[in-house]
Image (cartoon, rainbow, N blue to C red; front, top):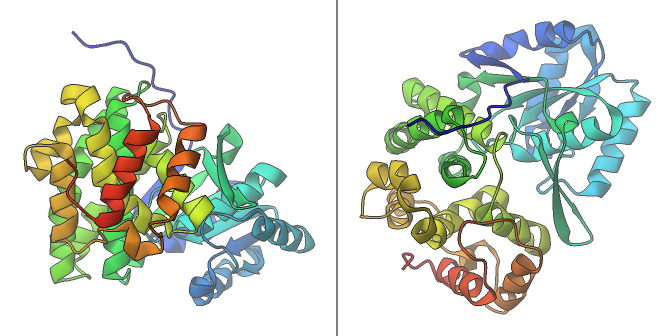
Length: 353
């Protein structure tokens, strides 16, 4: 019997293909906007400038100060620049840092957003914003946060460094993993998440051999879209809570932290969710979803230890305390001892038990 479900529908317009960057001016015009501020990280400033030139008279300038975990002080500077330029929308070019900044501006000003992802991290299809202030990351959901348009250009991912290709793909898989057992999952998110597992399994080894393999890049980007859409439709649980704690309170890099945590958070919840994680264990093997993801991550040279990301052994107790202070709803009980053990295994890089 098909179970009852609610599918809230899609409000974000998606443009997917090769060379779709050329459609940015048309999409800005479609929104009825005429002064777009282009956002990027400092690393992608040249690409942001080129995009602003492509926009021509529709460009209101660039702000190339996006950074990880969306610090509120950076958002304040970006909004000042946005208002000084008399902008009426933002075009976010880059990964999760830039997408987060665009969302933070939009929810404060009412700006429309056009997002152009260049990684697989997958926050672009969501109504979720995580921001950092005073050493703590907080997360909220609001329909005003969800972008109006997302443009996926496979060609922009051809130069994505292999290390970031791997970590952002594992970040995307984490969205699907939590979507499989989310209480508000639905057949649309389940189908997209199931399809994403073999797509990433096949694409990442191919990209390790040839990072400019267009077919593998298209397969990975489509899978990332499916995982992002899943994240934007369902409730997050333990994995995302821990990633937010380690990023916001300890400054760990976003995608790498997701990659290291993924096998361990999967294994922690696996006993409580039964067959719901079979799409992962069936895809990656080794008898369980957690172990399968650990072995897959190792095979594609992903980072395996929190110790290598800047966390210290002395940080583990504090991280466990923060993570269990206000835990997200989770299918398996969140205990201080359980989380401390999980963090120790992720710190050491052991295969989850």
